[in-house]
Image 1: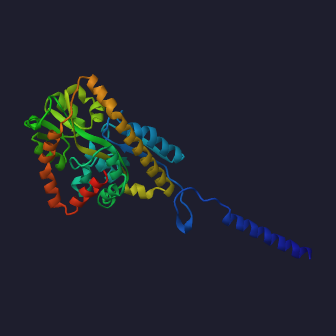
Image 2: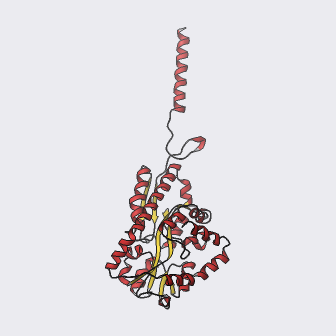
Image 3: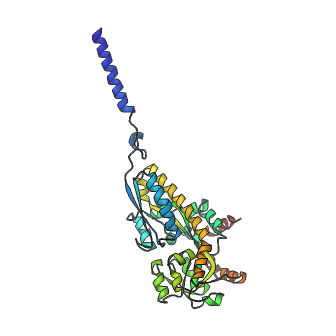
Length: 348
């Protein structure tokens, strides 16, 4: 009897140890692995490239929100390094870097619009009423539609839309009417819609990367450029310009992107952390940029910059001058007219 009890006790103890070994281990934090388990999170250094000056709202938001949130919430598995001011190349170079995986993340403008036509809609002229209108469009279904082909065509995963702002012309002389555009040498990005817009207004357009703008203005290779005034201030171009035309001829967004192959290698938790951090950072940047306009204008006025607000007649003339650009867009893209209508409807 004693022998039987001893054997039974041994069997029960063995079973308890076996069950404990099978069911008592906590899964590692990560995404689902083989057999329903979870793979551990690998460590990654995330380089984030952009072309904005260090003190621009884009980089303030990246430092104060994106970097902090990602590093804290990932428990050290994700480290963020911010490369501002074109340190990893001009926009095309760092965008290509994110595409091929040599750079993990970037915050470009719409450099990809030549290949992905719907992305261009974000910068069609005189389309947005104000910041609230633009934010509603880019952070809603229309923004999702615009960025819908980024991953399949270019291998980058979109994370969040941020703002560059309403573009205005700065120059070394006053632009008070359409005649003042004639002969004006304007730097614009090397993007077809930009170049066409400048030409339709009557300017001589010189495409060049943003990193070359200060020298070109200083050496009078060009007379002016177009960008939101936050960039005019942050990049120091006010030192070599005298005037700003508050034309608001175009709204420029930016977009947080990550290399798609890297994105698919991350755990579900890491993906969630990065996506949420990008949205928080982008929201903060929208807020900073909109609030900074009056402060930026005051700063530039104190530096001697003259501001010209176009009257209604001048605005109508500019809008009429660029209408052929829309005619070309509608002819080339059957979906474009509906896109414009949808965007305008969001202002109501």
